[in-house]
Image 1 (cartoon, helix red, strand yellow):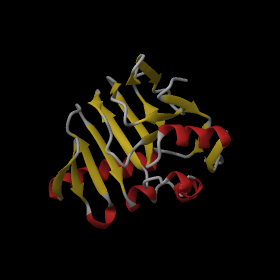
Image 2 (cartoon, rainbow, N blue to C red):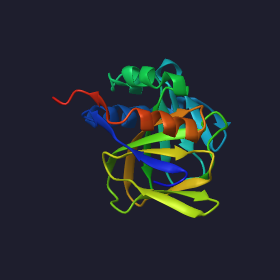
Image 3 (tube, rainbow, N blue to C red):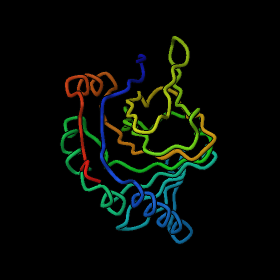
Image 4 (cartoon, rainbow, N blue to C red):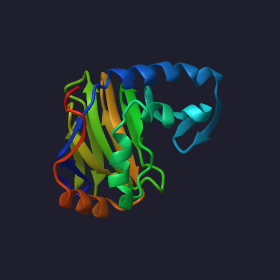
Length: 192
C-alpha cells in the first residue's frame, strides 16, 4: 500500500468472455460515430449504446461506457448503488494494447477503482508519481486497486490488458476510508 494507491479485497464472479466480445464488436462502430476531443481522449458517440473513448496519448487504449456494456455485467447496478455515497460514474471497460502514457484524470474523476480481469503481460503495472518518488502496483488478474487519479500516472504494458474501471468524484482519502470500512466485497454469481 502506498500513499496514492491501495489494493482492495474485491471479488467479482463473472464470465468476462461476453463482455469482451461485446466491447470488440462495439469498437468497430468507431468509424461510423461522431467524435469530439475530451481531455486526453477522443470520444466517439455511439448513441444509446454508449461512448467509446480512445486515449490519444497511448499506444492503443480504449474505454467503453454505457448501457450496452453494462448490460453484460448484471451485478454492476448493485455495485454502483453500494458505492453511491462516493459519487461513482457508470463504470467502463478498458482495453489496452501497449503502454498507457502518463496523464492525470479529469477533475471530476478524482479516484479510480481498477479491477483487472484479463492480462497477457505478467510484468504489466501501473505507476503513480508522488512527492516521495514513484509507486506502482501490478496488473495481476483478479486484483482490484484504488488510485489517486489526480496524481500523474500511467501503465507499463506490452500485452493486452482488460479492466473494469469506476471513477469517483471524491478525494482518494475519502474513497480509501470507505473501502477500509467495507472489506471483502463480493459481486456476481460464483456459479459461472
